[in-house]
Image 1 (cartoon, rainbow, N blue to C red):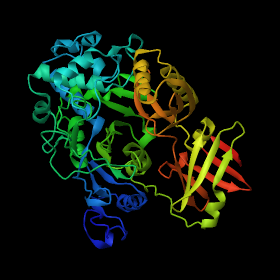
Image 2 (cartoon, rainbow, N blue to C red):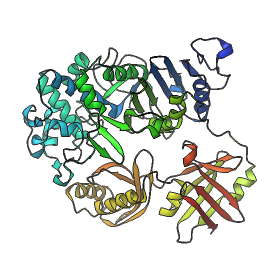
Image 3 (cartoon, one colour):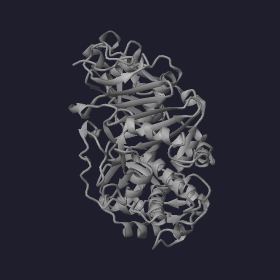
Image 4 (cartoon, rainbow, N blue to C red):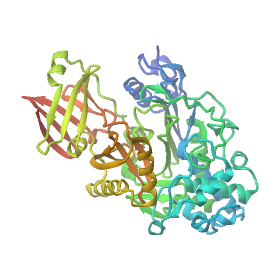
Length: 541
């Protein structure tokens, strides 16, 4: 197959990317991006990249809409935008504020009939900024939930007084904002977005009205997810917090409209540009996060979503200094959209070279067999190394082993705090944790012990645990929000870390930027792991 349409504003073969076994669609005026995207496509990336500015335009796609099958992805392929939907909802609320329909200081209960409990007093602004103290989930993705059921479920959630004024991410809070929009406007929520906020062609992943265009189907763990938009609903579990779908090109168009006054008056735009608070060094604005210039080379406003059952990851950023939009959308779990943006973003923004994936290196099978085995660290943590598909796969056990191969990109203090919160959660002493433990015990029997194994982060901080039940042991990870509520969980076992052969040894997780790279070598019955946090040496057991 050929790389198609990868030209500097033309389809002239003399300016196109070289022929590969990867199809890249679209046009781009960044000389290096189309060629680099073909190489990343060959390494495993699948999705779309769009850059739009006053003097630049780049709309590219790589990969296919259904794993190995389907059509080539383009900038017009439809993705579920996940939590980027929250930025859309925020824009809807600001339009109602500009029309004097509501005030951000108004309590949510003023506009939502049937809403009771402490959350009814939460201000609209606190819900927009995730500072209301609302803790817990009001429903599960792709499980039918009607409007009245959603109101009742949200009414029953806890408002943690200690978390008021602090950033505690809440999907339920944005579903409540969707209910506020409906009550304040007198128009059904989805219809309001279509009429007042969304661009023509945008819609919803599940239910009507659908987004216009061919859809990318998600791939998780090498398999199609099966969440292709046929869930009949009702959809209030995701309504307002993750239900919208559109193409990368359309999302770029919408983002530009938000910040250049096509959708909102100048005062509302200013509200989104200026951070209202800080969280972990990132400015939090209404519907967006503000990134300092060290991330992409310019100050940026960003919104990201994904990680759910649909199998999509999407990020959109606005660069106010150069008035450019960058959108990345993916339909596999090979690399998150945020990670890919951080990888290619600095070169893309500066107009410089785009980083490339590692070149594959052939390694003798005997060398791979010789490296396989179990390697132990002095404190007892270990690495189990096995041969797999021209490389090696390592299963780390214990905190030092986990963090050597997959070093967290947050501070040690943040890791310690998260691990302590996970340990506390598994005691069942708080209301949210009691609910989680009850769910675990319903499936596995009485919980007898919970041991923290270590932490990594892949878009979120994850703490691995080993849980001992009356019926056996289970391992996996938890990600918690700042109030100790469960933000993500996967009890499917310990991570299997791919080691890719390179000229300098084996590279861990080739998706990481160069300054976070981890390299592994094997010598004299020792496994040496070198990374941004130093070097560890494990001896063959």
